Amino acid sequence: MKQERGVRTRNHLISVAAAEFDRNGYDGTSLSRLSRSAGISIGALTFHFAAKGELASAVEDSGRAATRRVVEGVTARGGPALDTVSALVLALGRLIETDAAVRAAARLTQERVGAGPDWCGCWLPEVKELMVQAAEEGQLDPEVDPCPATLLTAHLVGGVVTRARRRRGERPGAASGELRDLWRLIRRGIAAPQTETEMPK
Image (cartoon, rainbow, N blue to C red):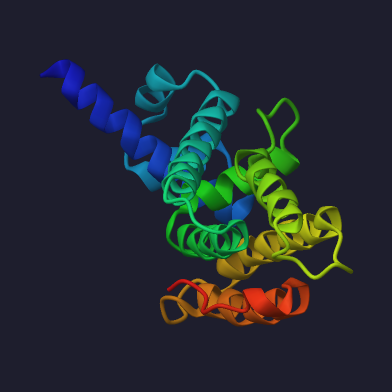
């Protein structure tokens, strides 16, 4: 029973910390702020996480794990490479909008000295591989280089992280809806004419 309670407390702290790190960044979040937001004492907090950096690392791990689950779920479906890129981009948009740990991981791995692997490393290599595959299979316009197309995707998804953070309180799906509209334009520009199929929902 004590062990289960400890796991619940730890998960609660990670959830609260994700929201605080997402909103205020690493330097703008203190242990006292986290303690107040979580509704527990500093002593109870430091029992689970001895330092702010440990809690930040746990949030990063949570955000990366959630991202990897989405990546693996989308890529496991198979299908044309460019369609898979589309599905992955849109799935990441929905995840970013709904999961504070994912947004916090994206922010912390940029801001925090000693942070773990960059959040983009959880998904961008798969996008690059799929873009290269799409080019090889004639799904990209011959004028399109898969490397800049991958970089464009990174900037687009990174922009969704910022938009979702700044627009909390707006109607659900606003940021991911914008992403869908922008990706439709991008896909139209990079795809070979015969690969213009309907984007996934």
